[in-house]
Length: 486
Image (tube, rainbow, N blue to C red; front, side, top):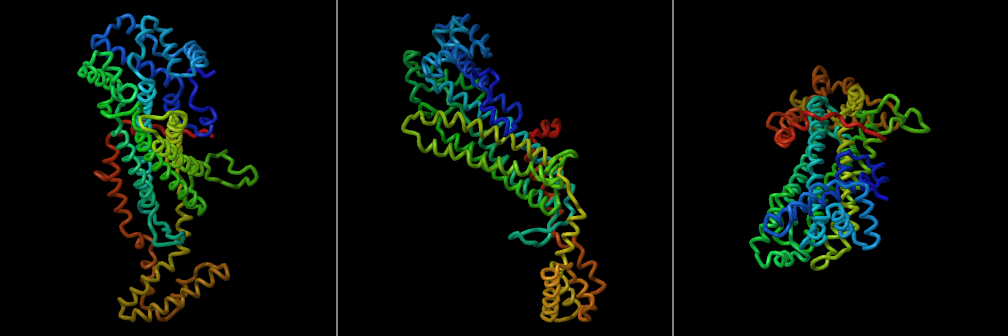
């Protein structure tokens, strides 16, 4: 039997490892207790609007919001008979609050509790997720500032390209995360309550309850909306809130999932080059067979769960498109699975990113060596321009560099030797006028353009990161590095 603390899926939680707060939000107990709160708020509002509901009934409802094991047993037994989970919980709540048994769910339809509860869960889940994402952005911003001056090879088409800096590359990741933060904030701000709308959204049942007094029906809707913590409710609904909301929130989460896979993939490539590694504990084992390995398992998991999060929202799109007229019940089972899983997955991803960004390891010596292997080829344009500055023909300089470059490349590719282009330039009498300038022409810091200034502008005072994170400063200041449990 399900227990009050049971969560969405035990097996799912084992593999995802989301945070405790998100697990509790999507627990069976929270779901049932939120339904009870919604029934309490409805009864309180109806009483305030002069319907015959006693103080004792309200007191009993208010005193029995917390689900007990007995409440679950009663609801489960009733559901086996009725095959209707909402009515099973109406019965269980009525048994716990007998004075209110006759007025629970008065005028309401099942979606009054199921849909309004889901909107509460969407809102609260985003409120859990957003500060965690803000912490990751701050940590990655700190990392970028630390390494804003460290030149490293850039890559385009998977091939060495003009150098960037380690910090500048981290800003690429952070810019995408800032877009995710903005998307999720917008999705949160757009949420509205379904409210008190009746079976097909016309409020007909509540007009009947209030003897045709539409003003009181409107006031009932407004009171319950405020009690639920929403600023406004949808004016138009069917039996359900529009499933376009699930699509909207899901797309923002899917975009975050794509960012996670992109960041994880970059870190895995850099680990392959031995330039950067994710945290790796002293006693950690990378491979059961190859003892020397340091597999980037955190980044691999980030890619895996990011991909899963991207794909989950397809259920929301298909469910929205498949709705018939005022509602069809084929939306129920898939949403009960998909909505929690989206947020549990996203929460697990913020924990992974937090852990990774708290302990990224940079190997400057390896980065420098890899730069030096490619730098001579990248510096050839500098050689040509320096010769032109000395009064020599640009075309002749270009041809000399081309010949020497191909000779050096042959040594690297066909003979497995080091890149000796600089040595060949030094030996060629043609380049004697610029020999004293070679150290300057080969300085890696001269190849990174405005990378340092861009990092400072992006992450510094009044920069994009600071402005985006202003509202999260309290959570960032009190946050501790996420611990990862495999």
